[in-house]
Length: 180
Image 1 (cartoon, rainbow, N blue to C red):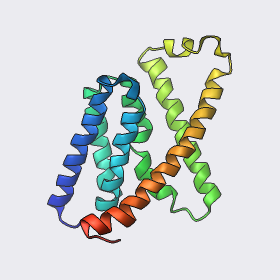
Image 2: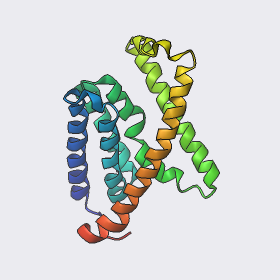
Image 3: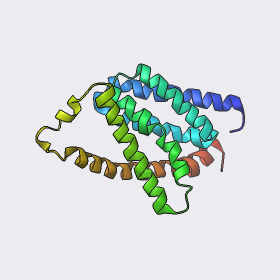
Image 4: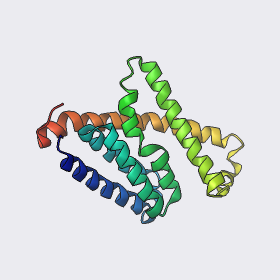
């Protein structure tokens, strides 16, 4: 995609779709993690078609709009802190030839983003009740939930890789008549 107007149009459409998905967290409260993840998947097309600079600019714009318009603040933070930038960051992390290092950096990225997001929820948004929701789950509940989150992260990363491959090797050549 070479023309600037095409890049702007694509980014505008994806920004509108991402913002709509984030707004829908107020309509479907059970979609606190699903909608930000779906919005993040749309970043794949922008990263492939326009490059990382345009994709990060779009991510910043959608993040600002999400902060203003998203009724579910936890979902907004999940998009801003992880799901919005990870599909773009993943392109860079997978260029590392030494795969164990690539995976270590991915895991560090995920854990840092999730921990920071929940620290913001607890200390900035003053929602310490999130910790009391664990109840009798025990004093190790945060570590157990983070461990389960890491397992889900592996599944998400694998699914994201498959979606990227389908977009690049199937959708682009067949429907956009573009190859890379």
